[in-house]
Every structure is written in structure tokens, then in C-alpha cells.
Length: 230
Image (cartoon, rainbow, N blue to C red; front, top):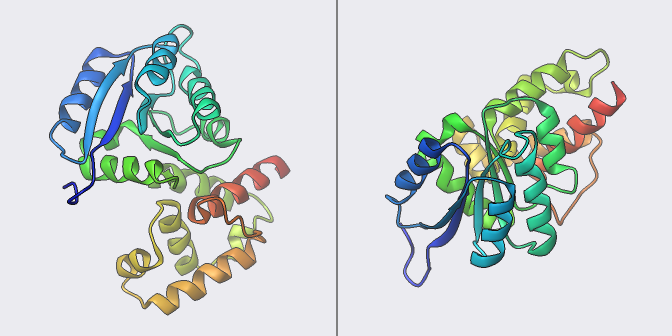
């Protein structure tokens, strides 16, 4: 529900498949927290509608006409360059890390990356919309799990130094959860979570990036570095 005095977040949907586009619109129309202000079906139309409507958040497919390659990511970068406060949530059916790196190569703030199967979970989609609108970041837990599994199998991976409990914290951080939310999910104290987070940052040798959402950056920065070193 929208809190008293708050206005609904204005959302633009960019998806070339009609049924997916209209289905997502109708689902979001059920929620007071968001207002779907428009729809687009290809690269040219999403760029035009983003300029015209100035939405708070754009829900966008990775692959759209004209080439069905990375139009969504190209549009995301162009829109962010022109209007950085616009949040972007990419909806994709692909777990390929190439798309994750392409989207987040210029930073993670205000970006979300969700699998399309999440559209049926309205609560999660709305949480992602809120998070990116506020300048935070969201990465689908399923995709995080895939990336972590691939990296942990690599010889010499620092992920091997993390305990199962620390890996659990890392996965929940990547969802954009607060320390308290992580503690609640794992049934441990807030102090325990804070200690585990500090240990994760130390073991992964991550510098503090105050302008970014560290709970996503912790995963992404490390995974990108380990990918390039592989």
C-alpha cells in the first residue's frame, strides 16, 4: 500500500511480446504502490516513451526488436545517461552472466535484474521497483546462485574461503536486504550478521564503495574480478 502522503511510482513497461507486456501491466494495475504510465515494444519506442513520460522506473526486457540481442541493455544505459534518477529493472529469461555484466558495467545503483518467472510474484517485483527507484540495486537470487556456483568451482576462488553461513549472508545481501532482514531470514542476531558481512568483505578483499549498494556490489565486484582473472 502507498503510505499517506506518498505518490505511486510511475512505471513504463518495455516488452515486445504482447501477452507478456499486457499481463505484466494488468498485474501491476492491482497494486496501489505503482502506476503503469505507458508501454513500449522495441528500442526506438522505449527511448521515445522514456523521454516523453519520464517514469520513475522502467521494467524492460533484455532482448527486443530490431535485432533481439541486447536492445534493453542499450536502452537502459542511454536512459540512465540522460536521466540518472530513472530506475531500471531488467526482466529476462536468461541466466547468462554476459547480460549481467553488460547491464552493470557502469555501476549497480538504480539497476535490478530479475528472471521473468518473478513476474508472477508481485511482491518481489514491487520490492524491486521500489529499490531501484530509491537508487538501490536488486539481483535475482536464482541468478546469484548460478554465478556463485560457477565461481566457487574455479580453482583458487576466494569463495572457497567463505563458510556456508557466510555464503548465505552473501546471497541475501545480493537481494538488497538490510542487515536486520538478513538476520530475520537466517534466525540469527543482528550482531552476528554484521560480523559475517565484515568477514565476507575482508575475505573477498572488497573496498568500500559508499555510493553503491554494497550488498549487491559485494557480489558483483567480486564475480566480475574473478571472471576476468579466470
